[in-house]
Length: 228
Ligand SMILES: *Cc1c(COP(=O)(O)O)cnc(C)c1O
Image (tube, rainbow, N blue to C red):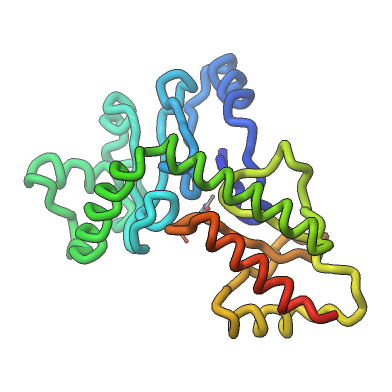
């Protein structure tokens, strides 16, 4: 399952699904791309067999590689399963195990270096819990400020993740996403177009080195860009 669904910003019900998975004795693969490091996940308690994430989301590194945390017993049985040369996780694992952490192909050295630094900063901040609290308070500040400016969220509050939020495009006839986007960009902020098939939205993400004052300045910029 996808944990934090970044198209809508929805946080899927991990605990409820983990109960189903264990009830039916299925293998549990979690796409934690945009949650690992930013939302606490107890892999053992939830019976997660495989967790997938990457360098460039809540760990706050630069883009360049993904990683998988999984049970030894499970990966050990995967030899020869991959139908892709590059995405052969078993082979990657074996190469790293047998060669002091060597990558199978050319290693993304600068990304690994940035990742190591990102992990230091992650520790300094206080780990997942501290980061979760910061993201969560940024997200609620964003939502309440946006509501004051007249915007509505796509999802009801209990479904929101602290990572990214979808807002409906205003129903104002004079609203034009492109103009709004360009104006905000000129003020120093880049927002995402929405991607929900049957709803006209845009998205605002708040992972990264973002603090309360940044959300406040963003809200001020949105107030300025909102000239309809
Ligand atoms: C960001 C994201 C991806 C894609 O990640 P890349 O860094 O583009 O490889 C996949 N799944 C989820 C849930 C994401 O948030």
